[in-house]
Length: 245
Image 1 (cartoon, one colour):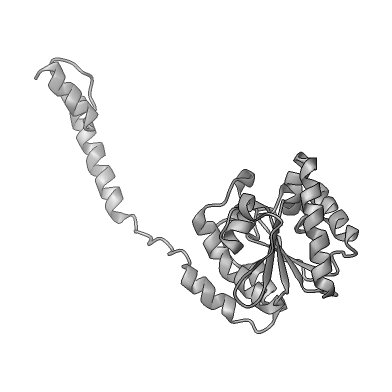
Image 2: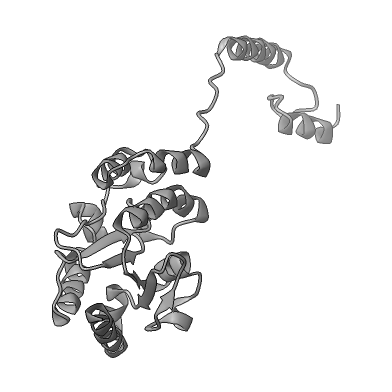
C-alpha cells in the first residue's frame, strides 16, 4: 500500500502508523474499539431539542393579562434567551403620578443589570436632571426598555432578541396609553418610529392612535457629547409647552 493511500485512510479515521505495511495488531485493536464505540452510540437515547418560543406565542402570552402589574410579573418570569446571561431582569418603571409621558429606551446598561433598575447610574442621574429642568421627575413618567435583559457585553441586540420582547413592549404601551412617547437614542427611535435618530431628533411625529413621538439623544450620548444637550433641552421645552395645552 502506498504512503498516499495510508494518509487518506488516516484522514478518514483509520488510525495506524504511516508505514509501508500496516501494523496488524494496531489495526485489530482499532477495529475492536470502533465496534465498541458504534455499540455505545446505538444505546445512547436521543433527546429532542426544546423548540424556542415563537413571536406568535409570546404575542398571545402578552395579551392575556388584564392588568399592567400582572403583565410586569409575567415579564419578570419570562424565559427570554438573554435571561440566562443577565444578572437581573430590568423591569419597566411605572409612574405613581403619570402626566402622559412614556420614555422608551434601548437596552439595560451595566448599572441597570447590576441593580435591576432602569436608567440608573450616571445615565439615570442625567435623565433626572433633564426631567427636573422641566418640572417633572420619575414619579411623572413611565419608562420602558426595548429589552428587559442586558445583552452580553452590552452589544447591539439581534432582530430575534428584539422581536421576542416586542409583544410585551407593545402591550405596555396599550396599558399606559401615553400622550407622548419620548424615544432615547437611535435604536429606540428606529424600533418605535421607523426612522433613524439623525433624521428625527427633536421633531414630534404622530403615530397611529394619536400618540406623539419625540426622539431625542440617549443620556449616554449626551455624557459623551455635551454639546448635544442644547438640542435636547430645546425639544424638552417644546414638550413642556405641549403638555400644558
